[in-house]
Length: 540
Image (tube, rainbow, N blue to C red; front, side):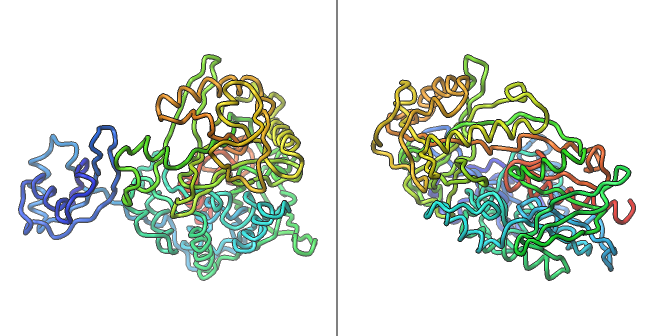
């Protein structure tokens, strides 16, 4: 097959325009083409006239014609052989080992680690501290609607991980020479995600659709011999002679504990498993503090973002709600950037600990809520929170506890109008933008919510963003605090064999160990870690 890239057509092109463009690009007739498929569709809005941009894979009538065309267009970088994107298991066993591999955590990384191990025949055991996704959803709504927090079942903990209550974004900037991201997407589609995620440039699923997808993936793993234990929290790690030998597990449903023999353990913890990080640190597992970011959520009318980004094409059904990505390097040396932008979404309460406030963003597949939201965050480093690998957690908790008090000590979040924030004065009432955060927003002065260097950098960045997106610094846009869980504040460092530097058999993975950022990259990391476990189990 031949892959053609940079095929550009008008937004409302005819049904046959793409095939005609393929013919003219390759200088062949319709009879020369057996079939073609769209690999990716994006759009180019840099010029006044918006264009759709396609990458297509073309199957020709003969291998001889394909060779002739590739030889003819050898200097054209947009005409190349189509790569082999098929996924091939690194191992396949008839019988699972007596001591089965264990995966801790059932977010995107844990799901794909377990899925791959199951497909290879290893029948993994998954330990998940939270509940199944539908029960978890009810508990999460309990905080949003009734101010009742379940510390083991919330936005952070439970089947599907933190990505379940997000925009369901499925793109990443990771290098992916093996097309493992394609494997992730294919498994999602197999589990019920819309097929269009395989071809649009910035695919997403949305929270409600993710619930069913996650359930279906769970059932697939179980059907292949995997075992998933919910409401089970790892309370200790047994390490002997530098090798993991077992786990102590607490059954949160009845309070009992039991021992689980294990010598291959995938740590797919997620970035908010603070108690587990502390246990690992106490047991001497090597980890180190790392940079992360803190800030606020910002909300605008989605229509404002659509018009600024898409102009006359705003509202076109093929384009959907517009997104953005912004960055500003402030005079004080700090970087300010947009994070986890959720078009047509809501700001959600995302704490996993009592008496703390944490914000995050979420969208449904339709992305048809009235507001756009994104994190506006400032990069920080271990120099800002000295004290060892767990110091970043202390820093996060301090900000979250302060936000809880600022919001009224009832899980409402502190908020401020963007115009007042830039001017340095407290907000007393809302303007034209109604914040979406539940349980509610208490207007205040967010200058007290973050360190001074972060506030200074953000006050400089917002007007700069307004020059890139007209109206971004509008007075009535709303900031809601605080956003602290942008990524893990530590790294559980691993070697080239994907194992902990000082504990063999322990495989740090995903966002919690700082080897992923988002659903797609976490899924890819889960696949690679599962492959490493498989190689160790079969001895190659």
